[in-house]
Amino acid sequence: MTSGYDLRLPRLRSSALTVWRRNVLVWRKLITPSLLINFGEPLLYLLGLGYGLGLFIGDMAGLPYLTFLASGIVASSAMNTASFEGMYSVFTRMVPQRTYESMLATPIDVDDIIAGEMIWCATKSTISGTAILLVASILGAVEEWRAVAAIPVMFVTGLCFAGPAIVMTAISKSYDFFNYYFTLVVTPMFILCGVFYPVSTLPAALQSVVQFLPLTHAVALVRPLMAGLEPQSVLVHLAVLLAYALASYYLAVVLVRRRLVV
Amino acid sequence: MTGEAALEAVIEARCLRKSFAAAEVVRGIDIAVPRAHCFGLLGPNGAGKTTIILMLLGQSPLTSGSLEVFGQPMPAAGRTVRGRMGVVPQIDNLDPDFTVAENLRVYGSYFGLEANVIAARIQNLLEFVALSDRAESRIDTLSGGMKRRLTIARALINDPELLVLDEPTTGLDPQARHMIWARLRDLRQSGKTLVLTTHYMEEAERLCDEVVIIDQGRILAQGSPPALIRQYVEPEVLELRGDKADIGSLFDDVPGSRVETIGDTVYCYMHDAKSVDQLLQRAPKLSFLRRPANLEDVFLAITGRELRD
Image 1 (tube, rainbow over the protein chains, first blue to last red):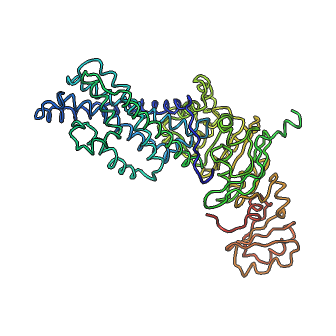
Image 2: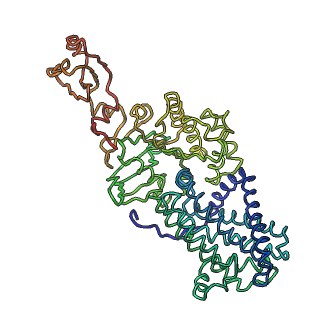
Image 3: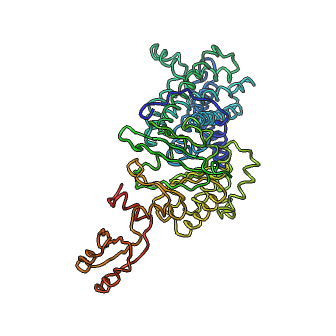
């Protein structure tokens, strides 16, 4: 076991919520600046791009551009938030701050730490997505109450992106490494997965590629919910997001065990 | 307490081994730590002390051998065992996002303790480590000594039976060290079992009922500090500083003496240092110190004087 990997399946326990609770307590201390960013950024996006570009574009795929864009931004913001938290913040707690080392001297295991962190990342995704939803509804971009169903989708999207981010953290020596992930993974999804324009306008080959990318499925769920339409193939979209979450949870646990349990 | 209960081992390691890809760092260690004892793991840097501590926590799987803590196998029983254990790590890992009291509160929650139980303990623990007036302070406003004291309080939040301390006083000023020593003696007195690693032989001599001296993953010596001193070195030491020419062959004729030279200092180990008083009067330019042998002399005699990195 010394030189190999500990491949045992992780166990989900209530200790994960203890880890989550620690992060909630820290977040509460910084609640004002956090919320300011959560509301300020989407307001800029929606006003600047939604109104500005929307004026020229008019409708996109049968929706007002502001609605089209706002739903894309809700999904991509869930991705961004979870990715940032899972890389920069988790790295800070794992390496310079040694928070996990202190947890591992108590009954908490790596399994609990990673589960707690993923739930926390998803919580932050939900907070930032909900803030955008609120801003969008104030700007008149949300059709009806059905849009609240987008809130659990934000959480699942957060879980789906938290896992891969923590995998990157587990193998990275410094913060610089995360630039690769953002440039090669997060930004392409932001551009290609239907946030700004429908996936159907992509070349056919690219269209089948983006079907494997999770953000496409998050957008496919959030957009109709915010536009007051019936979402299609809900189970497929949720299954893709959950599959990414579960597979990356397992991989993250194995890699963090290797890094911290020597 | 019956004799058997007193001797009940809190920690029992047999043929404990640990290899990493590059090297074997623990090479067959056997130790038994009885309840309510203070046990010292001594050794130069790289001796394997911290690896042994990690194995005690279940954070480092064994390569071979067996290790039981509270009679339970490690690392399999890690979660249960850590619930009954307190740990003071070598490098501070207090949570910088929280105040002093919040650090204790959040750490207590990691053990699944009820909020009211934690709240009741926090006050006593802060008093115990003389930090009551700093309960609401941020961690980055504390001195090194205060951080260490808080880390010790934190390790006690679950009222552990066993306290593991990895170099508890490294880098602290004398006031802080003496305060921590007094607290560790209180804890041992109250029936807790203590395991500590240290580079300071004075610390081990003051605190430990029993020590093992480890180097390159093996136990080189084991026993109580006075017993080790009796076994490994002459009872008296004369330290001389001065010109080599003045020291010369001063001790060649003193029976039973052993001489070591480090830089400009000569250490002369002997059974009766009075016998050399006359010799020293012949060399008035030398400065000298006569002292009883201590654990540091044992440590150097056993592990040698080469530098370790």
